Image (cartoon, rainbow, N blue to C red; front, side, top):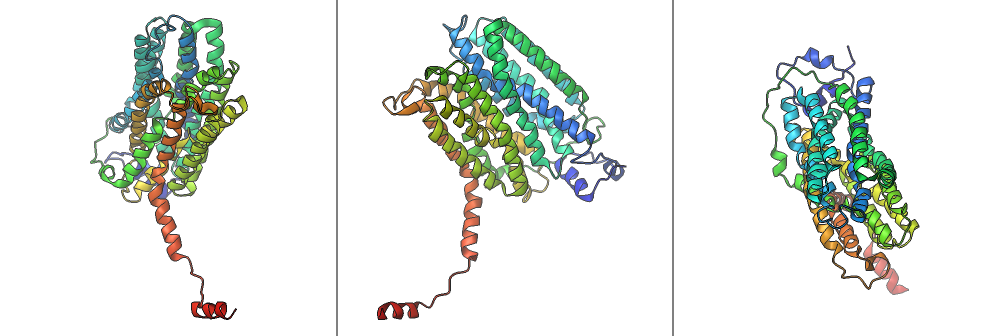
Length: 461
């Protein structure tokens, strides 16, 4: 029998929807949390799913540059910028529904993953044979997004079962897979596109994703016993009505509307600045690689401190990166520094979502971490929907065309918009930090001083 502590039992009951007929013996016989073969295998599988599923879509900027420069999309490229953001939006907005279905029918995780993988695979194969940007949007965008939703999110929710004390760090490791995949995929895509063309590239990517994701879907195991459909227990959704939730959600939506823009536009930005062809993919790779450390940093911060400090660090770092380095990014070195800083502080901001869930649990002890994260994901998806169309409109605006550095380029509006939204995304940290500051000032010992004596001394002098 595994050594399952009372704290772990409480965490299991609090964090997952358990059948009413699940006995105490079942709970005590669970595999150990935060350690053991099952926990680390699940975490590794989620990491590789993250690297393939998200790494491909986060590297779409390389494919978009190729689409815009080559036929058949060179003369009809309207809507190409929305392909990646549409896929992300579907994956993120659909996550709360997947969370509810997974809680009700946990046995469907494996079947749903296989169905989703088939949809992703078919979408990329159809995209490889089309000459229409609209069909590309529906296949590489919509079909890929629906399939990835079914593959990835049920697997991610297993982390909540396997990790209790180190939950934030575990989610950070999993989400860091996006950075690893995003750091390697741009170079692979660029090489394939220029040697094989986009059709063969999409077919090869479909095969790679299927080859990596299928074993992960088939061999991952849940920690909790699965005995068919679970009864729906009344869910405590009262936290949605509270200001605390929306103080985290609304700033996250604002950040989400601009977070994909650097990886989406850096390749074409580097090309417009006359930099070498390798500069764009390398900057995207650096951004995605640095986001690995960003996810781990955010996860570590929320495990040790209140989530407000993680939000503050992310906000200040990303804002300085955008205004200080992307806006001045007329040289490769400056652009690379921006990519690293934004990946570290901006792209990794979802890493603090477990801290948001933990803060809400102080008021609502029965809140499910997976549900909170999926709602935050849905907010991120709502922001991602705006990212593609809004950035295309901003690209046509040049109000700062006579300004210095990159602000005067056609990307000046995108840079300003990104920096402002990343700064506004820090609003979620204001209430807690303001309360902490006022408490510290109120409790600070005042210097003892005899003002009458001081006045007499100054007068006599």
